[in-house]
Every structure is written in C-alpha cells, then in structure tokens.
Image (cartoon, rainbow, N blue to C red; front, side, top):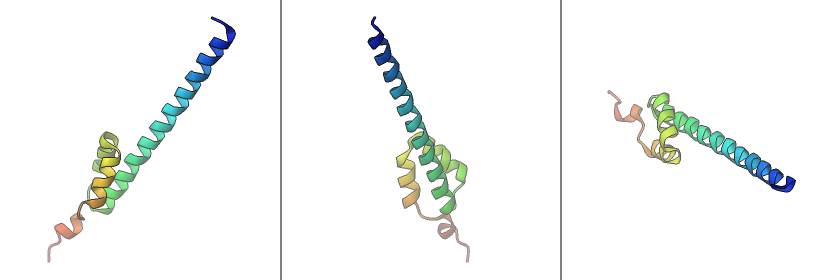
Length: 76
C-alpha cells in the first residue's frame, strides 16, 4: 500500500466521521423539535422526544397536525 493510498483511506474515514456527526446532530435536533411541538400541543415533552428519536421527521409532522389536548379535553 502506498502512502497516497493510506492518506486516501484516512480522509475517507474523516469524511465518514464528519457525515456521521452531522447526521446525529440533525437527528437529535429533530427529536428536540418533536418534543417542543408535543409540549405546545399539550402532550408530554418526553413522549415527543422519544417519538422524534424513533421516527424523526414523521414525529414532527404528526405533532404538527395533532389537535391540541387542551382543546380536546377542555371541561366547560
């Protein structure tokens, strides 16, 4: 293996590591956003975070269109 081959493998590894870190950062941000949307709709924030970690963008869309629990369970 030549030195340029070793350098190429190293830089591919660096690129893969950076891509993995960015993907993890984006995924956790989506989970936090799902938790925020869940809390705004009256659902437990932790439920939103867990759903966001498991399903990502689907949880964000779901909590965005769910009716608010405050309106659904409003006692008058």
